[in-house]
Image (tube, rainbow, N blue to C red; front, side):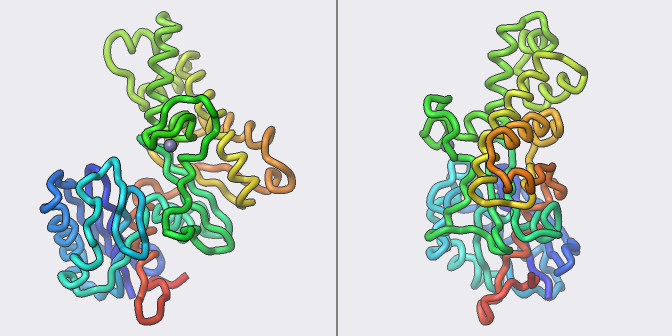
Length: 317
Ligand SMILES: [Zn+2]
């Protein structure tokens, strides 16, 4: 039986019918409406469009923010305020006529990598996504870590610097505040003003420097841009070293837009892991790029859809 995965993001809603082998049979994409009233319409519309004539055993919505799993709603979503408080299951299930579950988007992406990507051969995976913020998901012994309320696995809000920069969550020195795409942009501005003669410095005088500019300039050999990414990798590695000690994963997969910098970030992250994590965990773990890209959300959500009568995942596994 197939399942539908829906990745509800701040800018777009992506839905797909997925087979148990991870093949996407049909896909739909809609812009995310800003108005609360139209959000449900767009989500339902995307689900109905992809289902078409396909036989589907369940639907899972991957949504950004803090979820209360028992209540099937999002309680806090700074990047998608319109979704907060909507009883998603109660509103959508009668309309689509298929059982619906909801899951945090980073947990769903982690599960996608676990089932069909970088973690498909192993049982213990830590997934970290470097975007505007930092999302995370943890699979230990084949089980997705959710915690008591379904809000566990928030790896991006691990404190790694007691007096570090303010994070979007209100805390200081979270991993997200030091190693996300947003943090790269902030650090690039600082380094550009310290080194105005560098390619990074010259670009910053012309216009706002984006994360992808830093990656491009680093790939072209600009020392200032390289230093920004190397430093970002060090902060990331400090966070990852703790995850290695706590979870003893076989693989840490790093995804998201900023992960396109690849080795420019990951090389120094691995060095920090080797310096800081404890054996034997540090000797086992492999820190690598995630393999699915933005599809991991839809694939992972589909793989988390459940059959309520058996409690099992519709796609098995
Ligand atoms: Zn935070």
